[in-house]
Amino acid sequence: MDEWGTWWDVAEGSNPGFLYQQNTMRDALVAAVHFDVFHRFAGRVVMTNIAQTVNILQAVLLTDETTGTLVRTPTYHVFAMNTGHQDAQALAVH
Image (tube, rainbow, N blue to C red; front, side, top):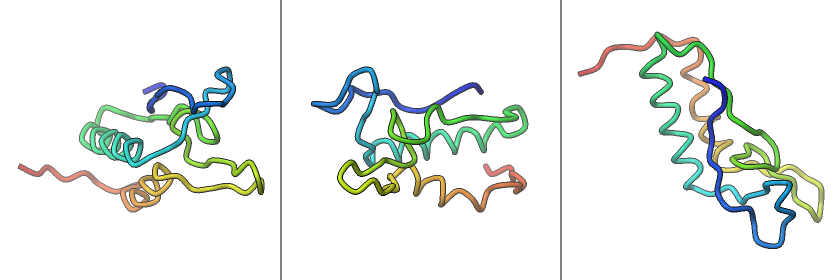
């Protein structure tokens, strides 16, 4: 799968060309649903890529403009919670 992730309206007052959007629980839920689908079809889906990682669209990290530090987003935490599934075997559940 080429790229996945959310694309909402850019944050008010930001440069529309940079596609900056605040990451919320809504994005975390979208990531969790994607991971569920990827796990379900792991026999057919070889690789997936989140579209962006820092400061744009469904970012995993956002930069705090005042301090320059990186802030972990809700999407980051979904990635962290799913690390236990890496290299695991999918089991059929009915």
